[in-house]
Image (tube, rainbow, N blue to C red):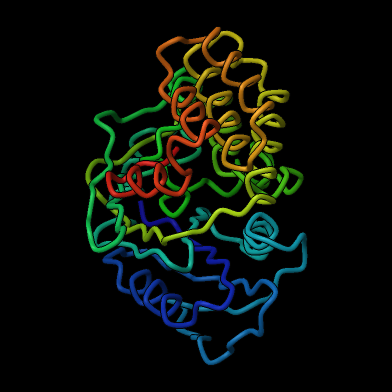
Length: 303
């Protein structure tokens, strides 16, 4: 199968990393035509990136929808007309063989509408591989765990299913937080997600300083997710994972009373959920949220 592929790359003020991402996509050993749609969001577009080669085309457009990642991705999706659509963040890098492996996996699983592949997390000079040992991922598995191996920079969709069935990236999630996870859940409601073997994308994690308003947005977004996916009620471990994240966000934002309320909810669903105890430690100031996140990121994991 040599289906045509469009790669949507939303970007904002990362010119050097963006060029690395583009070069890695253009360098894929794949027989079919590939176009890159660079979507500039809240920044001045660089039209010097444009290339007209029909086999390896680069287009530059601006985000015409909601500001942010979700609107940028949707602007790019709607500007395409290829059989397949992929995502790549502007600070990530596709590795050799990534695209060919995923197209082959979609060909082998015609019922699947999305294919992913493993990643290598690049954080603070250290690499950690994150891969799954399975060909298909189901909704119950995704409810239990976020499976961060399914990173948006690896997503490869059947465009017709994305536009006419699954639906676009949800632009109403508060702060666009966890919009990739919500999209995965929506995909898995319809059919299992295909997963190609090996590592296909270098994902760069950057040091971040989480300020109070951001933590509030994270908590709000996760509550939004629980309300819209009642399936979590049938997955106690998954439900506790989400409420534990909310508890941690409330603690990190300095809202001790709210944090304790969510800690209790988490323990009721799953007493073994570690996030509840991390939230408790942060709420009681035994450790800072930034310290917890830094140590998790060094292991290629998040909260």
